[in-house]
Structures are given as structure tokens and as C-alpha cells.
Image (cartoon, rainbow over all chains, first blue to last red; front, side, top):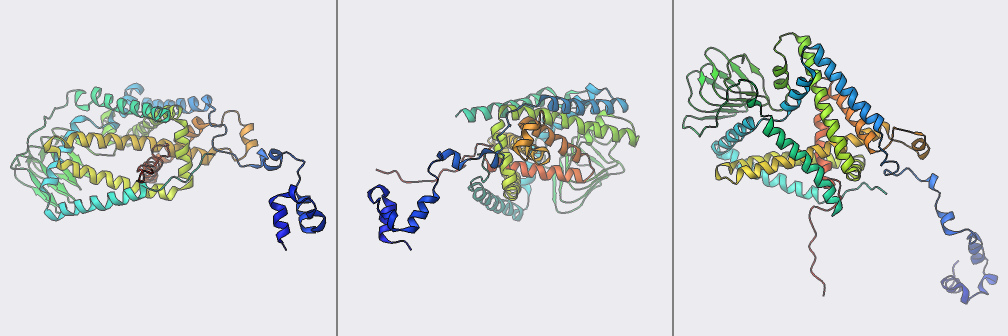
Length: 151
Length: 313
């Protein structure tokens, strides 16, 4: 049981040196402290800690990166050749077709704009209400702080 | 500030590449395809919502069918947009572009004067590359097109990781820590983008709408690209990341952000090759990516909104 004398000793051990001789509990407490070891050695064992995400992250593994890229490009070129298409032309056209043309985008914009303005009133009101509700929820979700840490 | 600059440079570079690609490789500049000039609204334009439509006499204007099918039996002198199935028969012909969103197009050979656009599909690229009806050749070209796009993803992901590795890693950690929140945020963000685009399209006739839509589109593309790179990193780390310090020390090549991103691209790319399931997985990864890009503010882990506090004396 902690007494007032124990509290006074724990608050300022040097001012009450005689308390240790009277109190077995405080004597056991102080004996449990290994004051001889430096603080860093007592607290930290690097190998016992889990691997941090940043450890080794700056390493640039060029063999894997270049090997992967070349493998993908080689297989794509080989398949184009098998299909009777020039590999360069095939890759270029595949990339170009993934970007929508301005012509198509402008047509789509014009058509959607016309459709929205000619939509029934109920649909327009529904779009307006959905816009407010969804963006309200969006703002609420954006207010949450990220959880993951990179210590 | 330096982190902001480090992130802005690669994102701006990617945006610039896309913009340049749009300018130098518009499809209408290739070959001898017909160029269809934009046209003003016509009083004969037809808009149908939630119903099926049959065109059995000529129409001098645009036709739009939202959430219904259309049977084109006569000439449409304008563009056609359908969110639903399109079927051509008889004298059916469209002189302008045909945009088919979310439905099949039947019997369209030689009946479209402009361009047939099917958003989100690779059929356009495949039909451009091969004129044959052989299903084997068509399958080969389809895989080759997907691999070519995968190669582009790999290059973009590596460039972004080299420029902003720390931010990508932050976002990757967030995916593994709060996957459900990121996915929910991604779904809500995509819905918000679509609704905002619809609202902005109200403003297209008033000039301000077009710049707003362009800005919204650029933001959506940047968010998707950054988010997908974070997903690649997370997948790569889950599949091949070191679990212990000893394992990390033993590894000569298979470590580091670049390797994790490359492995993530390859794993998701291979999954994408699987019919139907691959497309679904890629779409889910895109939603997750958009969510994590916004949840972490592109890896900067800063709040989107500042809390208001009165000034203290």
C-alpha cells in the first residue's frame, strides 16, 4: 500500500534517502529498475520492430523494371506480328485509340448538353437533388483524416 | 512546398502528354475518313428518355435515346447517341457520328458516315488494326492491344513513382489500412464527377461550361492515373513485399518502390486479360485508386478543408 511517505519519496528520492530502509515495497521497486543500462539499450531493439514501409523503398530495381517492360512489349509485338500487323503501327494505334479524339468528345459534349436541357423536369430536378446529396456526402468523406502511417 | 512541386511536375507532364496526344493524333486526321463538322442544334433534333424508338422516316437532326433501344430503318442526317442497344435495318444510315454507350450495335457495317464511338471499349482500336473476320486474328490483336496499353501504364507508373515515390507509398499504405473507406470514397467521387459533368453541361451554351468540363476531365484523368499507380504499389507490396528485415536484406533486386509498382502493374495486367472478370477487377481497382488519391490528397496527407478557428489575442 502506497503511503504519503512513499509518495513523497517517489516525488523526490534524494530528499528522503532514509525511506528505502523503512519501506520494503519502495526498495523492491527501485531494485527492479536497471539504472546501470543506458536508456537507448533498454528501450530499442531494432530487429524486434516490424519492417517500416520506407525501409529499402528508395532502391531502384532496374533489372526487374526493364525486364518487365521489355517482356510486355515483346509479347505485344509478337502477337501483332502473328496477326499480320506491324508492331510499331499496332502499339501506336492501340495507344492513340485509348485517347478519345477531340471530334468524338466535342460531339458527346454537344449531345449531352442538348439532352440535359431537353430532359423532363422531373429528371432535371432529380439530377439537381442528387448533385447536392452526393457532393454533400463527398465532402463529408473527404473530411476524414488518412489512417495509414509511414513511420 | 517542395513536395507539392514534386507532385505537380509529373502530373502536369502526364496531362501535357495527353493533351499533346489529343492534338497530334486525332483519329479524324488518319486516312481518308469523313470529317463531320460540328453543327448547330436543329428543330428536328429528337430526344427520348426511357423509351424505345423506331426511325422509319428521314430525320434532319440529332437523335438521342437514353435508357432505351433504337431501331434505325431510315436516314438520320446528324449524330446519334444511344444509352442502350442500336439496330440498323432497311435504309437505316447515320450521316454523322454514332455514340453507343452501354449497349450493342447490330448491323452497322457501312451505315455510319462519321465515327462509331463505343466509350470504354477497345473495339475501335481492334477494328482499325485488322480488317479480317477471323476470330483467331481478332483475339490475337485484342490481347496485343491490351498488352500495349499495359506497357503504357507501366511506363507512366514508373515515371510517377520515380518523381513522387514517397507520395505513392503513402497512398499505398492508406489502401492497405483503409481499403473500405477508399473504395467508398472512390464510388462517391465517381458519382460526383458524373453528376458534376452533367450539371456543367447545362452551361456549355454559355461558354463557361466548356472550360469547367475540360478542368473536370483533366482532374478526373489525373486522379485516376495517380490512384492506379498507388493501387499498383499496394498490389505489388501485398504480392512480393518483404515481410521481415532479414528477407529485405537477402533480396538483391526484388525490393524498392519501383519493383513493387512494376510487379503490381504486371499482376493486375495479367488479371485484366481474363474475360469479364478481368474488366471487373480493373474497374474496381480504378474506383479504389480514385478513392485513395482523394483520401490522401495525392499522397500529401493534408486536409482538403481547413478548420475555422477565431484568432487569439
